[in-house]
Amino acid sequence: MQTSNSNRYIRQLILKGFGAAAQEKLTNSTILVVGAGGLGCPLLQYLTAAGIGTIGIADFDKVSLSNLHRQILYTANDIGANKAEKATAYLLNQNPEIKINTYSEKITAENANDIIMNYDIVIDATDTIESRLVINDACVHLNKPFILGAIHEYQGQVAVLNYSHNVKVKPINYRDVFPDLTAQAKLPNCEETGVLGVLCGIIGTMQANEAIKLITGIGKPLINQLLTYDSLTNEILIVDLL
Image (cartoon, rainbow, N blue to C red; front, side):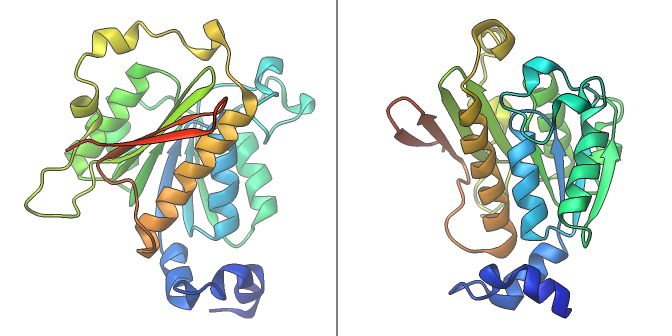
């Protein structure tokens, strides 16, 4: 490992149970983040800082003034600009030693497989059921781990889905967790009910943490588990999905 890398990641390298071997795994890993909004901004910053070798950023949306209370990569000067492109420029300045692929387009059923096939892990930072299902189905088809993140008003959820850690156990995917998609689709989004800005940071960094654990093998990832966090009470509930 180069000296510059060692200096940059020294606080990780000296961690008990981490070291150069874990850092090398991060360097060789590829992660696609779909959505560079409330969840995507904090998780992208921490993946970049941790030294993920290749990060894909997919977002077709543009920065608006109402984004700025929770989408902390952007400033008022970025209003009207594509989120994926602006995020890429910021993150490469944060860590020029990594590679970032930018997709300023919507992930659809037509292009999802071609994009997702190039990555080890896919992280969902979207805000619609439609997009989440497209990502989920492509991950199932390509056998890619899918890290779910969702927020609603004061509560958030995180789960590690579609991960084959036991050949005897069929991986759980998003459609297994939420089979009643009609009910899910009726839930109002943050444009209708609002969201606490800091909650995006909490859930987004949790997603980044799960990705790092999956790649390095440290700790116990939320595989086939759903974590729910309530920002008003700090209550955390973890439900086994099997």
